[in-house]
Image 1 (cartoon, rainbow, N blue to C red):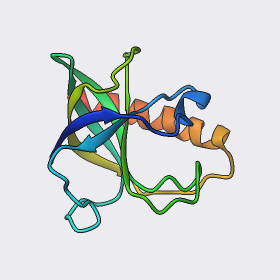
Image 2 (image 1 turned 45 degrees about the vertical axis):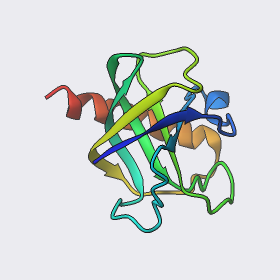
Image 3 (image 1 turned 45 degrees about the horizontal axis):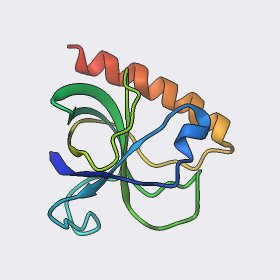
Image 4 (image 1 turned 180 degrees about the horizontal axis):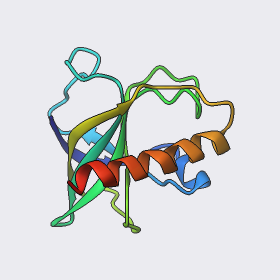
Length: 126
């Protein structure tokens, strides 16, 4: 599935643990609660600034970072640093990695995100 939109501002908690995310604001107003998207973390391909990158994308709530029920689309783009606010972006959800999970700490979450990045690289380099 490909999701399209504009990179918007989030709560910037990912950058505090070394995983800044691009927060996708869907262009067509899709309500993810009503769609057939399985909530969780995906290996993803990200098209932005005329390039394609590998990423890990969380679709759903952020149980470790906050207790908000809002469903978000947040992508950590591997091998990228820079400002993407306001840029159009496409995220292709390639393979489901895991479900949503509340970790005991942000440090524990960061350790899992490192593992997710390794999995995404392996999956998407095939």
